[in-house]
Image (cartoon, rainbow, N blue to C red; front, side):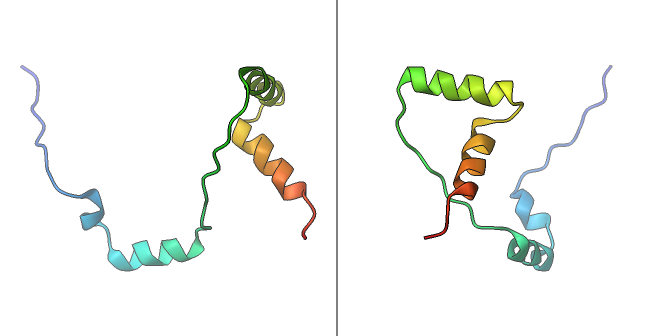
Length: 71
């Protein structure tokens, strides 16, 4: 016979200390999602480039944007 586990319900965040949660938010950088269209060929080119450099597409594009000059 196997051991049975007790399941609990509720919001996981409700068990956290609210003060710790608010403090951790102060250290986080606000992030924005960017969506745009690419042809299948360009997407493949970007995906292959990222993989060949051991990076994700997000890392490649983030690195590129960070190198743009401030205006």
